[in-house]
Amino acid sequence: MTVNFFNPIKVSFEYGITCLNFIFGKISEIIKLFLRIFLALQNSGQNFRDMRSFSAFILFLCTVSAIAQSNFDKYFTDKVLRFDFMLAGNNQKTVVYPGSMKEEPFWAGSKNNLVDPFNYGNLKYEIFDDAGNTLIYSRGFCTLYQEWQTTAEAKIMERSFYEVATMPYPKNKIKFVLSMRERNGSFSKLYETTIDPTDYFIRKETPVKADITRIYYAGDPHQCVDLAFVAEGYKADEMAKFREDVKKMADVLFAEQPFSDYKNKINIWAVEAISEESGTDIPGEKIYVNTALNSTFYTFDIDRYLTTTDIKTVNDFAANVPHDNIIVLINTTKYGGGGVYNYYSGTSTGHPLSDKVFIHEFGHGFAGLADEYYSSAVAYEEFYPLNVEPWEPNITTMVDFGSKWKNLIRKDIPVPTPAENKYNNVTGLFEGGGYSAKGIFRPESDCRMKGNGPKGFCTVCRNAIKEMLDSYTK
Image (tube, rainbow, N blue to C red; front, side, top):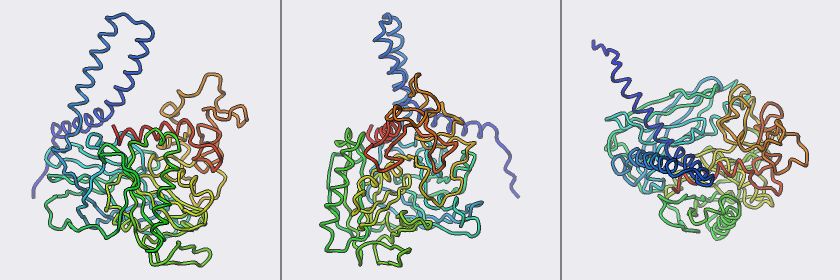
């Protein structure tokens, strides 16, 4: 029998490396903060010695930041390693079942910002260099499984959901660690495995066949946000309509702040997944059609909730193009959609409100924004514990309001902020959000994440989206 003794030096070293990676991941944010202070000092007429010292400090931070950036070429190639798995369980437990691995042709993400700086999502996967236990890549995400866990059904039965994790293809062995956010807001490890990139069980197949069209092209995918629009419920003779629908939604996106400021940093791809029949399933009306991505209304028995649990097929088609985020366009005139952070966003295309639904759902899928409404029917039960600060940037339970938009509220604005007309379009603290009328607060009286009215994103949501855009493009 071999006994493995606890080695405090090794543990301390590895813990230190992890901490340094986390700190260095925040360096760019620190530099931005100090640059703002620098400008403020300059405008206030500080003397030369103060300015010179401050400039030297900024130079030091920039140097440390450059050293701290992960060396993409050292650890990765310009392809994708895809790891498929299952999440299974009920409202109390979750089990991970590994599936298959495959190589995909296009890594579209940033080569500089490899470690997720946001800590968003109800799950995350982290990639460690197996030789040195150094964190070299991470990504937060959400899934329909986690949403299902908060429904009444999860209390009486177990279910499984297919999942997909993608990362730049490693050059050497890596450690893959999957973690889940607990109800108290902290992460706990669900699963860990070592992956050898030379493993001959990693499939090197060409992506499923699909015609693709470059609708808008701004430049190098590594320096842009690449959005893959995948067709659902479009037959072969309806692909001209699909391409028109993609362009329509892209134009809607580019007309919305802050995306309008990043038009020259967003690539739009159309992936033609051909369906045998038009439309989508509507179980409540006993309508069932044969489509490429198996989408359906009545997700969790909510008539407007339009999703697909077939994330495997969604990713199979999206693999035809470089992509950072996936949008599924569903060929139906019925109102509905759904968006899940770093999973996909989906919307019907033929309803009069489809453009607004698309922007709302993309707010979920791309930037991790929370729903701010609280009066519409949902299947969730106590989705947000009131004694825990939500991770989403646009709602708060006041447990840690200082980490949210507290500094954006003017001193003359009452907190909480009354729902009165004089406080429209003002950043405050309005009660109601996250499916609850009490105990959860939103930044403004109205926002695209609250409803389908004329107003777009509020200031807080725009800021959150801008930060996400910058993480891909700078």
